[in-house]
Image (cartoon, rainbow over all chains, first blue to last red; front, top):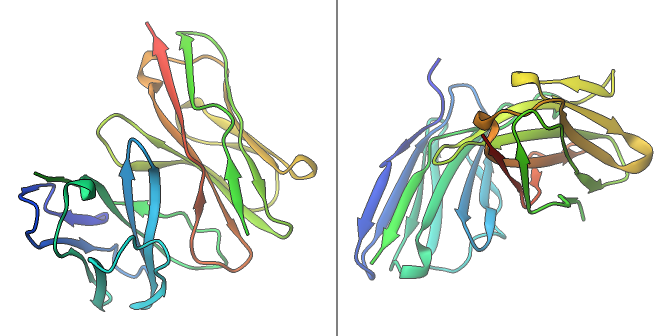
Length: 115
Length: 113
């Protein structure tokens, strides 16, 4: 079975540019999560969706960050404009809610470097 | 609010030593508990989970964890670590009917050959 698929795996861009990260959750999963991981702050939950609807975006650091889930099989996380402090590994995860005992399955992450 | 505390930031062990990583959570109701492992340069992978029944849960690669409700703890154990267990370990909790997991800050394990 295909797991959570993220693209690109690596992104290097200059500050000020728009960055779009993509995620395809596991088919049938109704929860999708975006995380950011850095050495300084560890693993941070940015936003999560249930049935394509954003449930909690309190972890989104600034208005420069936005996330969408136009359908059950695709989500994007956009940073515009990007800044060097946005450099991190961004993980997408999905899970199936069934009595809350289901784990989250993580993608391989996007390693983002803003120069 | 729910929270998860992992007591050790970095643990260094020699091969064949026994491992115990602490995890405490704060939530008064029914919880589901998870341990994830992240090998260097990789994504988080599920090691084991607890949601009901036997409080001693066995996971992959010889890991186990014990849920002690009275202590709000879910410590991870392995009797004999290997160099390949070098990774970061995250404890996570889901309380009640919430959809998201609350993760601890992680514990880095370094195993010396």
